[in-house]
Image 1: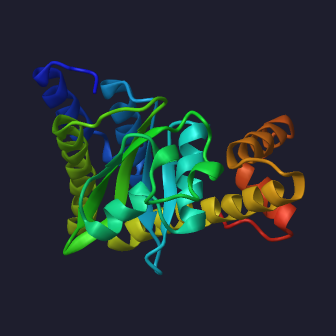
Image 2: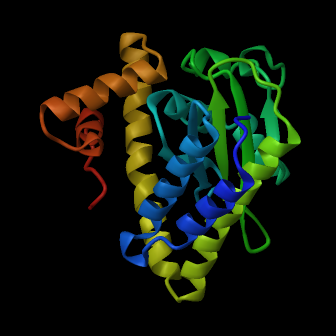
Length: 234
């Protein structure tokens, strides 16, 4: 873990808690994840939420490699972040490529994803998602690493709880569901491209995003077209 001044950590936590409500819940969560990534110097970070069937889906990632981690776990239904969700506890791995707990996970990952840590994000009686980070080389996670991640998970929990307390439960659910819906379309398109062209998840997404950018379209719209489906409404 990159050592930081405790005062800097406190200031950062206060800063993300004071974010404007006008930005929307999902945008606020994206900001928190980016802060985690920059503050601690991890290679990447992400946030996953459970859908109505208790399956984790990625909501926010800071880069393509991290997206491959969350996409792979969503596809397989297992991995360090999935374990953190179901065990309601921090889960870490020094090197996911050599971890016997998830032997089939490594082949779906970007090579940059090596050491992984995930902590639960809780709301009410139990977890609703996970906050996840990764390093690009083997890393022995310390208690200070997981405690810092749990502190930021608590900030996310407060954001969600405040939205519910302010009688924004339906708006919160709509925002999260929309974000999950269009990411599910993207995941399915990535899976299709991986099978058709023998690509990794990261390669498939990078190609999909480039094609969308070149045609000045949203990735979700292009993904839906590839699948022959209608994209979720904006």
